Image (cartoon, rainbow, N blue to C red; front, side, top):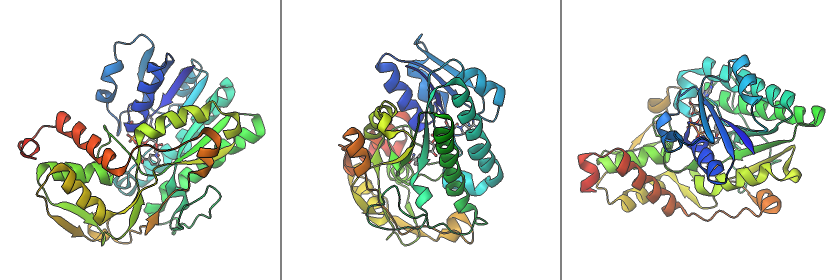
Amino acid sequence: MKAIVTGGAGFIGSHLCDYLIARGHEVIALDDLSTGSEANLEQLAENPAFEFVKGSILDEKLVNDVIAEGDTVFHLAAAVGVHTIVDHPLQSLHTNLNGTENVVEAAAARGARFLVASTSEVYGKNDAEGLTEDADRVLGSPLKSRWSYAAAKGLDELVAYIYGVDSGLPCVITRFFNIVGPRQTGRYGMVVPRFVDQALKGDPITVYGDGTQRRCFGSVFDVIPAVVKLMDTPAAYNRAVNLGGREEVSIKGLADRVIELTGSDSEVRYISYADAYGEGYEDMQRRMPDTGLARELIGYEPQRRLDDIITSLADHTRTNSPSPHTTAA
Ligand SMILES: NC(=O)c1ccc[n+]([C@@H]2O[C@H](COP(=O)([O-])OP(=O)(O)OC[C@H]3O[C@@H](n4cnc5c(N)ncnc54)[C@H](O)[C@@H]3O)[C@@H](O)[C@H]2O)c1
């Protein structure tokens, strides 16, 4: 495989690059480093099978040039994180709509296989137990910037799907449910790295809302092999496939686990959504995947438990950002 990974310097993208290179594939990562970092790829920098191209998916010519070099496109570049979306709504929308269209068009023109990273956010406020891929979307007003990410990702899916149906683009849509692991940063609103960071520093762990909202976290190490397998599975083409973990936890419960596993003496502090994200912010009470389709297509069975996920992230954070509190913990 000669793979193009857009968003390859990001959290999930960099693990995907590692995985592909370790299996003998060639990889070009395209990333504008807006939320990603070259440090995520430094282990590959000297590898002749790997190339990093700094640039934006909004640059149509660059996207065409890079994709012309590959036969398989993993499209992960996106404006992500609640803070990014709420603070920069227009730029985020532009990236997630126009950027994706550029990448899909280039993949179709090249005749490459294509995978787009979508999100559990597309289900919005549907808090059913075990969301299946055909579950209804329950979104708030499009004028609330909270929902613009879900709206854009929904359209990304649609564009990819239509290309798949109309022009035979072999196309997979993966819906990630709160994927966590080393290299993920808490800077843009991701909850587990933020809690781990706070716990290791001995700072208060800040829970937004009342902490009863429930989530299901998945390990990047379970998800990456699944992403590559799905790309190799024609029965997955033109389908959306949920990927995530299976252990549900409340956000307050998560804070408690993080404190216990890091040996931190942090306290838990509650912050209203309005203070965290501004007035009018809406959240969903529950978000849990049904991963039965992934099991049926590729035998997907997530192996890592929440405790493993927290521990591996804490280990990574300790070695990469030492602080006086870290050693004490
Ligand atoms: N982490 C999760 O739990 C999760 C959940 C659902 C969906 N996703 C999707 O998975 C993908 C990867 O997310 P992640 O968690 O690794 O986040 P990330 O921020 O680490 O990765 C996104 C990458 O895209 C890059 N990027 C942003 N705009 C770009 C542009 N215009 N041109 C080129 N590169 C650009 C960023 O620099 C970053 O490296 C995204 O598409 C995201 O929507 C992630």
